[in-house]
Length: 598
Image (cartoon, rainbow, N blue to C red; front, side, top):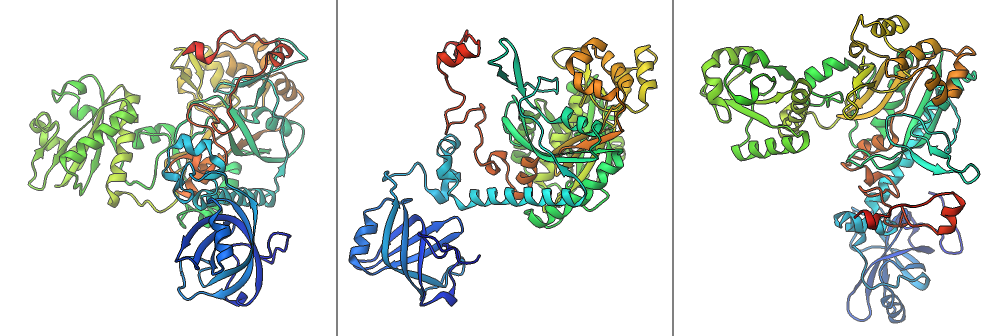
């Protein structure tokens, strides 16, 4: 970086090198540390955004001045650069030190004790970290995650523009829409009893842009969903690389992302290896059957086998009348204690038990449910392709539950057995041919599985057959696709349903008539009646991408100011109570407070 001469500094704290020895410089930053050596010598570390520089104080007046300051106070230092006797190769400025001739206090830290040590803030309780996030962000590790995020967003923006996409911002205050999650509602002052909604995604707006004649749209879009938090999802708001293409189909969308993403992952990722085009494509039903998940981690070479016919009648109670799935692991060296711990983790995550047995080095079935399998040993060994030393993990239950539990078991076994997981890479895949419809867990009725605006495979004809009862609507697949990387769903996308007639038929199956569609999606329905081009799009999650690139397990580590798991901003005190005057202006009456609810 070039010299940055200001009233406070001529250089930053990561900039000085041996070539600057003998120069008089000014630095500014946070007082990270102070170590006294006798009464006439002290060493201090000054930290700013760019790095750290060691200060050597041999002036008693300056030592007294700096001793009076608490750590993390901001100061400006003027002094002379000199070569260090004891060099520090781990520090970028480790060959030099600065001998101050003047110190100016810029911002006093008024606390002797900090909530946590800055460089060890990630070891502190998360609620404390989030309350003092401005201190947490001073930690170089966390700061580097935010820098990474900025660099990745810049790289994505540059790549999309180079691919001919135009960046267009869409509204934040809009109408409530059934996108699949809860809306954040904003009351209207001018229209009593009516509400805006924060967009769950710019879905309708980007499709309207295609209907308006724009050819390639993108934005780094803020999205708002009132969802519960988890490791890879932050409550409240998140960002996605939102894109849409006119006169395009699935292949066109795939081609863009397969060209845009691998260079970004290879350049900025923790691992330098990323899948090259074309990414593996796996139909949804095949993914569930082979990997037990619609977001398989392809770094793991283990697969799921169906063992229902083989073991359903072995006499083990949980297998009777159930779907049974098996995951076979060669060269397994886990102890009984480790197996029990692994199975316990699977049950916690999947809500369903895992079972097991081993085919040991002597060719015997041992452990777990081996005694139930023993009578059909030869059939089991042949059907599952067992080798001596194999471990067999098993799951059972309703088909989907057995599949999903097997998927969790596969992931746990892959992480436990390094020979079965090539961890240091980014393995992409497309999951395609998703079901158009599903039975809702809460409603028990037919609902859209993913995006209600997707084009069904088979078009109008297949929808009419379902409406006539000629086919089961659950067998209809859609032009929907997910992009998955290392077991994390980065994005969902689809070829859109741009034909009003097909749209009405699709919604009719979920009990929404023409009047409902026109009322819920007036702009899009009307726009499509004026002749809309075929179009398709996708929206990879920026937060999840950066989380993968940084090698973090929690998405909160790559968001500057995240909420906690309960959707609270502990630093700003949100959500909070507002004045009665504000409620009156918005025509809102609060009938129950959080304290009353508790």
